[in-house]
Amino acid sequence: MEVGTLLHWALAHWLQGRDPQEILAHFDQAWQDTAGETLPRQERLHPANVKLCLQHWMAQQPRRDVHVCATEQTFEVPLGRINGEEIMYYGTPDALLEWKSDLYVLDHKSTGDIDEDWAAQWSMNSGLQGYVWGLRQRGYPIKGAFVNGIEIRRLPPWDGNLEKKCQTHKVKYKECQPIHVKGEWVGPLWWSDARLECWRKDVLSMTRRLMDLREADLDTVKMDGQWRWPGCSGGRGRAPCQYRSFCQAGRPTEGLTHMMIPVPWRRESVSEEEEG
Image 1 (cartoon, one colour):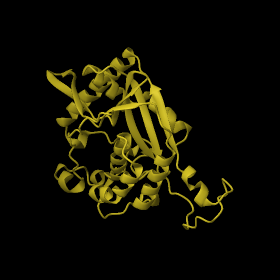
Image 2 (image 1 turned 45 degrees about the vertical axis):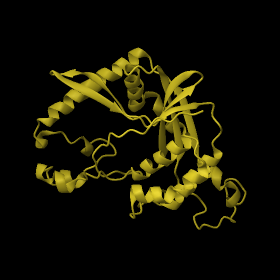
Image 3 (image 1 turned 30 degrees about the vertical axis):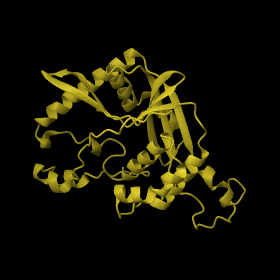
Image 4 (image 1 turned 180 degrees about the vertical axis):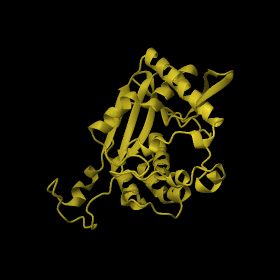
């Protein structure tokens, strides 16, 4: 999550037209501010590798015919009422873009592997539908959404010898290392008014269940993680659930303060960025 936050910082500046070299020059300090001294357990997420992936990614990006209207602006709109209580919906899209005279939401996504399935998953993404629905309620004529993908993988060569020959591209790694970093621009994605209304009703239905949980004894809450793949223990590259110890201890309410990490949601917004 911390690496994702850092990448969103870098990509926001990149969208605003900042010089890539300037972004890279401030990368180390941004890492300290975001992640501190602790190094991730995965090598691909180490700062030197992330910085190199970002450098190669920015160098390869084509010039897109889009106008950046705003970055990371938080909005809130009424979603509906449940038992007389008004439910508010909050969102912070990474950017609002103008493309071919229409407004679109843009969301940055970082991942370890971009493939065909990765690109296909966004066509029914709940978060993107929520952004489009919510901003339309605020009067923005949002037509759809785009996803900007950046792949963060452990870059070869594993021993750091760039003079070695890549078995895939048949040239030295110093020539082909940049193309080991993938990026993908997905979209435009569109949803009908009927689909977005279905999204709103589904969210209200789930909210009702969550409101009921506020009054429930934690001992009575079903523990889906034990049965739903990959479950509590992870597997196939997925990390174990970070709340396993809480469940193993019987989910004691008194354990919430020392068995979980409090991360309050910050509702600050970034100022609007205008071009030209």
